[in-house]
Length: 437
Ligand SMILES: Cc1ncc(COP(=O)(O)O)c(C=O)c1O
Image 1 (cartoon, rainbow, N blue to C red):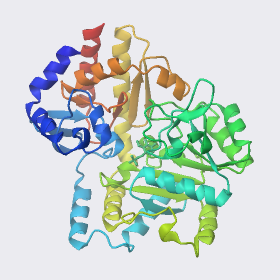
Image 2 (cartoon, protein in one colour):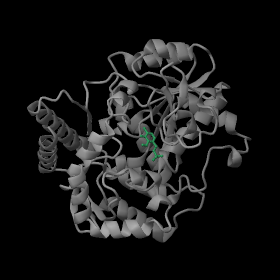
Image 3 (tube, rainbow, N blue to C red):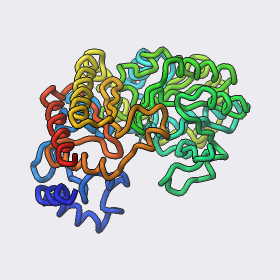
Image 4 (tube, rainbow, N blue to C red):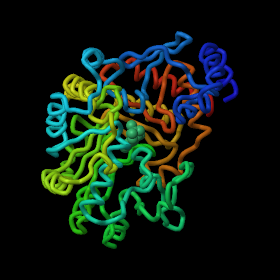
């Protein structure tokens, strides 16, 4: 680790100089707190990003398997998006009035995810927040149920885990919880219908907010029958089902919702559908839309807790239209999913060679490894996290031109990645294992 840290410093003098001066005016020297979490003792500063690659201020090029943690899953700097937002910038970016692009985007999302009515926010976090408010308004119930070790953005109700006594408590590291989360939320283990029924049957739950496969504590897939069982339970107890597809759109153009025919009440998505411009969207079934339209007429909607001055702006809508019409299509997934399969196979082969029983999990064009056999739920996955080992592997890769997602061992494929890029990761990952075993 020490020699990798030294190498990192030696090859990045310009990033180091910028990181040092950044401390004067930026909290922790970074524009956003997570940016302190990259491998290496200071963050790389980026000069430009294109397709599946980026270049840092020391003129080193990297294969980018993080892709802005899904924000750039389409590949960086899509020409159609830069053309559209440049055009839009010349015509005005925000008026708080609709542009015709909004209808096109809503129709496209409706076709992809199978729920007919949509609105927009600035981020997936906001879209989740808004949907929780809608669900509480419609049901008159206070509580939200989520999966243990879920992540749905910085949404207060969702920053929770189950403790060893099975109580819902704040996630470790959650900054300044607004209220004791047990007042708002019940967490249940993923893949546990018995626990889910116990949580829903109390009768105070407005909605169940899920990722159809956990993607933020490694990828944990649902067991056969879990998603259909969960849907039956939400119907049995009149609980609204919200499916957050922000990451699971890696499974295909309509995410797991379309692939697994989930039929939710609400769908939430953000990140990649803006091609890099901050966006979020929430869609809903016709029945929910009808009820909301009735409830909201006459409401003071400008101060209702759902909105955002720049939500649905001309800029956001033009970026989403350009992205959805040029990327995230069947043809893109036909290219990216086999690349993720190749990445998975490469990591599996390297682990086998070293007699490691680590597990690699793929979901569509995303894949991830853990230092354990396949976990069934978030707690099992969290139990296998090894921050030191993870930092070493990530730093080793970064020093050899390969970027993985921080926080976990995830690789995401864009249509711009090649088999050679994937094989480079396999080669570097194998060398990293050889260095420590
Ligand atoms: C499943 C899921 N939902 C929502 C979000 C929040 O996205 P954003 O931070 O862009 O608001 C994330 C972020 O990682 C996520 O993984």
